[in-house]
Amino acid sequence: MLSCHQATRLASDAQERPLTFKEKASLKIHTMMCSGCRNFENSMNTLRKAMQGFASGDYDSHNQSKDIDK
Amino acid sequence: MTGSTPQAEGKQYDGASQLNDADYLEALRQQMLKFANLQISDTHLAEDAVQEALIGAIKKADSFGGRSAFKTWVFAILKNKIADVLRKRQRLAEVSEIMGSDEDDEALSSLFDKKGHWNPEDRPNRWGDPEDSFKQQQFWVVFETCLNNLPGNQAKVFMMREYIGLNTDEICKEVDLSISNLHVMLHRARLKLQKCLEIKWYDGGKHA
Image (cartoon, rainbow over all chains, first blue to last red):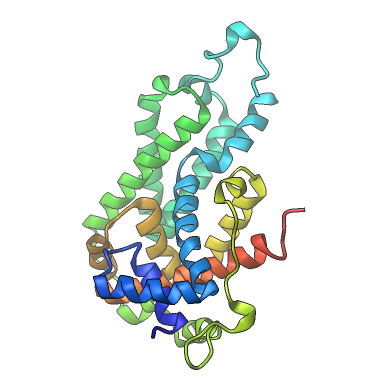
């Protein structure tokens, strides 16, 4: 059984490389029972999307409308 | 969101007009410099990269419909310039320096108990719909603060990975880390970011 520390590591690694079948299975079993790690795993996707938004126009589309109005 | 007369629309926001707005350009240049400095940590090389990216973008400025598109484009060029610099440069950091101090480790392991399970107060909560947050300016302020709170080297590899889009091999080469050490660092960075966003955005700091 994975610890939460190990489970979060796998959730992070999943952003970097394909997990092995065994890793995937043990992460899945862990997150089924552990809401904290399930939430952490979901937040990985949010973080990646946020970085993409940060890198593109999302970040200051609100500033843009201010600039234009002035 | 347009404050212009109808016939000026489209013309007023084309790429060329942005170059006439000195304040806008200066603000953009500052943002680029800040980013380039974090990545390259050599002020001259960083300034060169920013300069080249701006010149490259200005050449094509006419083809951009708005500031958002223009900025995306400039940063895309900047990211390529930085990637070039990083790829060319000799790696210069010691592993110990890159990996961070033991204190770092302690701060993180305090999230977990001895058996590696979440301490009750550190257990992550549900975040809700990310798209909702992304629409709010305050979210991005908090997000940037949390990125800035990462220890320098974690911020660096995290940004290389997620922002510049270098792949794992390229990052390992640049900072002279093994793949597994890199994964450890990214894991730490993500734990910190997760915690920071949760405290400052999703729980306590709920955007008044």
